[in-house]
Length: 507
Image (cartoon, rainbow, N blue to C red; front, side, top):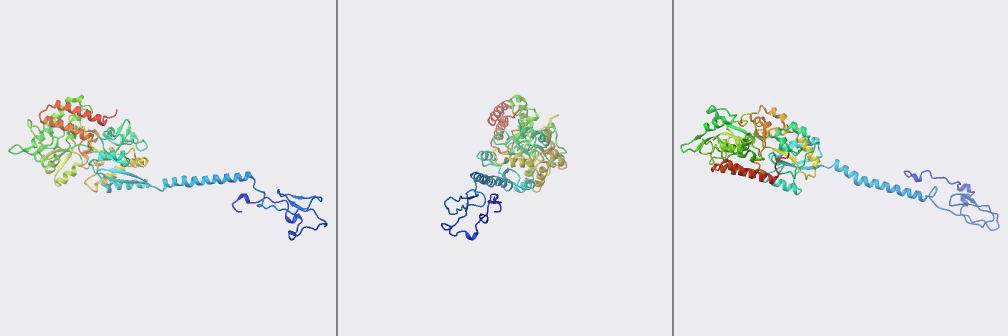
C-alpha cells in the first residue's frame, strides 16, 4: 500500500500452493479413501514452513492460517508503531495549538496603544501617526485630545485602575508627582547621551532623574517680553534688555487720568490675581537673584529683595504701573492698554483672538548683568508603567524623539494656526531664526530654568499649592507685611508641599 512502509515489499513464503503439489482444482476434494495409497501431504506451519508428516501418522485435514501478507507483526513492532503515532500526534497538536496561533498573533494581529494629548487636534497627530505606521504597520495608535480640566487627577486615577493611556502628555514639573505611573525609558528607545545632545539643559534637568529618562519633549517654551509696537514707537523707546531700562520704560509709558486711575499701564507686575503668569514672572526674578527654589530659607534675603522689586510696581508709595482693579494683563495687552507684557508663545493666539490687528513684538526677557536666565514651561510625552503594550509604546516614543518628527509636527500644526510648538530639539533652533514671532522663545531656551511656581497647568496639585503660597506672600506684602516675614511663611509652605509630593530633585 502506498505510503505505508509496514506493508511495502512483504517477505515471501518458502513455497507457493503450486509447489506444494496441489492443483488448485484439487483443493476442497474429498480426502483419499481408506486403503488407497496416500502421499505425504505438506502442512503449513504457523511459521510458514512446509512440514511432511510421516507415513505412520494419523491423517489430518489440511490446516490454513489467515494473516496479512508477510510475516506476522510482533509485539515490539506494535509498540514502535504506537509510539510513532503518539509522537506525530503530539507534534501536530503543538504546531496547531501553539506555534500557529503565536505566529498569527505576531504577524496578523495589531497592537493598539492609547495616546492622550492636550493641545493638538486629532487631525494633526494622525498625520504623525500615519508616518509612524509606514514603519510599523502592525501598531495602531489611538490619539485622543483631553480636556485640561482635572486632567492630572483623571490621568493618575485611570492609570492606577488599569484603564489609562499607554502614552500621555505631562507638564515638565510633574515628574516627581507622577513618579509612580511613569515608565523609565530604556536606552534602546533613546540613549542618555543622545537626549543630552538633542534637548536643552532644562529638559535634561527636568526629565532625567537618577540617570533615567522619564519623558520626551515635543516642544519648548520660555517666558518672553511682549511689547506694544505703537506705544513704544510713540515714546521713541526700544524694548528693554535689562531691568533698569525696564523700570524706566514702565514708568514713562504709564498714563493715568485726573483721578489717578491707570488708563494705559506701562508694565503688568506687582499684583498676583490679575497678572497673567504671575508665578512664572516671580520665578524669573527669583532665579535671576540666585534663589534656590527648593530651599528658599537659605536665600531668604535674595527672595525678599525679589518680592520687594515685584510688588513695587503696584504699591502706592512708588510710581505705580499696575493696579489690582485692571483687566487681567493678557486682556489689557490685547486691548492695547498695556505697553509691556510677559508671556509664553501660546499667548500669541489669545492676543490675536482678542485683537487681530494689534501690532506687537516679542523679545527675550530683561536680565541682570551677566544673568540671562528665563523660565521654561513646556510639556513632554511619557509612557504608563501599567501599559500592556510597553514595547509598542516605546517604539512610538522613539519615533517621536526624531528630529524629523518634530519638523513634521511643527508643519502640521502650522496648517491650523500661526505656528507650531517651538522646537525642543536644539539642532532645529536656527531653522526658526527668520521667524520673528517664534525665535525669541527658543533663542533663550539654552539658559532657561524650570519652576514649580508655574501658571496654567491646572494640576490641582503641586503647582496649584505652590502658587497659592506664593500669591499669599505677594498679597501680604501689598497689605504692609514685611517681605522678610512673607518669605519666611512662603518657605514653610514650600517645604510642606515638597514633602507631600516628594518633589525635591534627585541628586
